Each structure stands twice: as structure tokens, then as C-alpha cells.
Length: 238
Image (cartoon, rainbow, N blue to C red; front, side, top):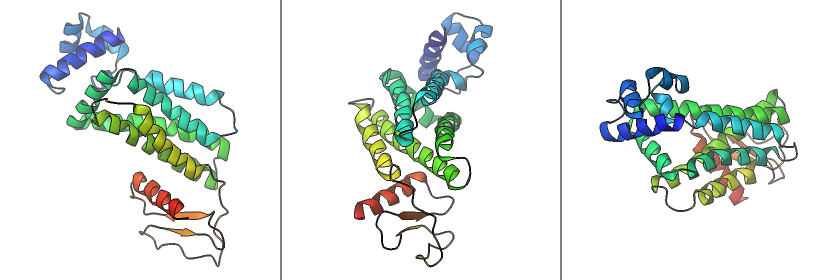
């Protein structure tokens, strides 16, 4: 029934537009009552994302079962669960991508869904790194990096209309994340080490006498893709 309702909804969204389609229109097209719709979807926005709850549950189950030997690799593999969900139905995924680009409210809703994935990944990493101090920070930043890398590769594929292999771009982006974050965490800066950029600025500096420690400082509003780009550039230069 979830699939029937989602299919009916997208037919109407394509014919009339999202804003001009009502729940009554959807249930009439699907041949069911309003009660059936709200049994599966709390709102019209939810019908655009019918598979995310299942995918989130699958991700949570996957992370609960992995061992502790490679936490960064584990969250990268968990992100690929989302990719496989999109790749399983390219036509629907491309339609949804185009629809969310056209409807601001859906874009906002999608961002809230993405945030739930990110929180799930960060929660797993906090369990490995610790929930205090740098452990929590490291968990949050790695989770954000994984989500940004995954979404970059996924959207390249969606913008192409679903042509080609979606895993290639996502794997490449996630490999960059692993290359940065699977290195051992360096010690916290001490007095006498090179000065960090002033507040509100961004920059990268290497620790004294070693090319293995890189410190990145950015203003609070810096996009995550820019942070990852600067780190990648610094690692490449090293």
C-alpha cells in the first residue's frame, strides 16, 4: 500500500505539481480512503520520501552489528546503504530529486532527513571515540564529512538523470574521507606551536617537525564541503 500511495502521489505531482495536489487527490487516484493514507504517511511531504524510515532502520541495524576495528570505514559502508536505496529505483529517485529542487518545502524536509542519517553516523562514532572532548568533535566532523561526500557523488548521478554507475562517484568521494580521517588523531596543540588563524578566518597548519599532523580551523558558517576540500588540498600538498 505504501508503494501504491507513493506511485499515485508522484503521478499527480508530475501532472499537477506538488502544491496543487491534495491528499484527497492522492487517495482518489490510489482508490483508497484518507485513513489508509495517514496510516502510512503523516503528511503529504512524507509520501515523497517513502523509503527513508526503512533505510534509516537498516543503517542503524548495520552499525549495531559491525566490529570496532574500522569505525570510519563502517560509517562509509553505512552511507552506501542510502546509495543502494536510491540506485534500486533510478527513475523514481531522479523524479524525486527534480521535485525537491522545485519545491522549497520539500528541500527543507529532505535536509531534516539527511540530518537524521548524520546523527545516526555520529552516534555510532561517539560510541567508538568517546562522547567527551575531541571524541565528540571528531565523531560529528567525520559524520558530516561522510554525508557531504556521499551526497556529492549521489547528486552527480541524479543530475545526470540516473545515467551510469552511481557507486563510482560515491566510492571516490568516500575514499577521500577515509584517506583523511583514518589517520591516527594527533595530539592537541600545545603552547609554542604555530599560531592558528584568528577567529572568523580559516586555514590549515602543520604541526612542528611533522607532516602527519594537520590542524584545520574554520569559521562556524564554513560549508562542510569547503572544509573537506581544504583538508584534501593540504594532505595532497604534504
